[in-house]
Image (cartoon, rainbow over all chains, first blue to last red; front, side, top):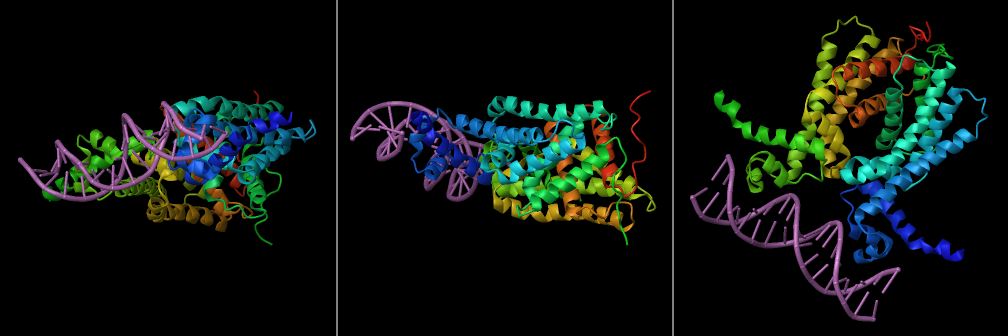
Length: 208
Length: 208
DNA sequence: GTCTATAGGATGATAGAC
DNA sequence: GTCTATCATCCTATAGAC
């Protein structure tokens, strides 16, 4: 048991360092020498743990999506089955944004470098992405079926905009305390009051 | 006059080629040799027209934002001054998405490589971005002032989500005929019915 | 204006000592 | 498991011929 725990320890350490570098520097700007130095190693030593740079990148990408996926699943599992779609979407948005901004380097690195990696790497990573997107498709479809979401909007479009809007928040949101919660509330309000089949719950109180 | 027209012709040709390559391959994957080959030149010849790779990249980035900016300004100028904010936002979204998907390589390249360029390049390019963002801030602020948009949503957040959602459509939207118009309509409907101070105009007709 | 040639340096990956 | 040393290749940029 203890053997198994220790088995991949330094491998995991290298991945942690790689994720941190990719997050802040981007894909192409991070060399194997950089990853090695950050890990307290020399470049050649990395090849004992990984057979190529691509393998490292793919593992960072997959881990990033998996953590967001698990965070959102956990948030949904924490709700009663009878919860409204609105509540579920709000919980999912909150969990996605928290994972992106607070849960470390893998999630941020994933969004940051996905568009920069070679096509072969992206291809290997796509199944993880598809799996997470399916969670959202299921959620939104259930909303349409139950009548809580409008039926006249293409769900692929809605899902893409939602994920796109959340992910680009990495580019401009400085992670101050409470900021993520506020952003999640605003985005949820914008999207839900547009996508919900019912009329807006609370009208804007603009004046006195 | 004819002299001036010809003056920067091959310089412009190089930029066209660079934009096309950056759009499809990303920033780091495109070398000066690639740009030269695409332009029908050798790498060394580029230095007659540009003093560094950074200069080429910055010019591609600035041109990309400028074209979107001009397209949106033209769309707004084509509306009567009395047009509602909703109509103006719809026109702006439509113009932004058309410029992104149909108006060529500079606009797409800009979105694609912005996150990949060195910090010094990004810094040089920021004024162009800020200028375009100001257009949207003005538009949204006018909507709040006139009472057509809710006053309880942070406008920086709204603007960032709108631009983010539109820009990421490059990642997943295959540019079929009519697709852009449909996406623009859907996004506009989602955002406006959430951000508008009035209640939803047309309730979802889900059945017969 | 475009070419060839090359400087000067970084990169991914491999071989073999320890 | 980690090291040193190195290969082969690529890069941006420069110098000088034509």
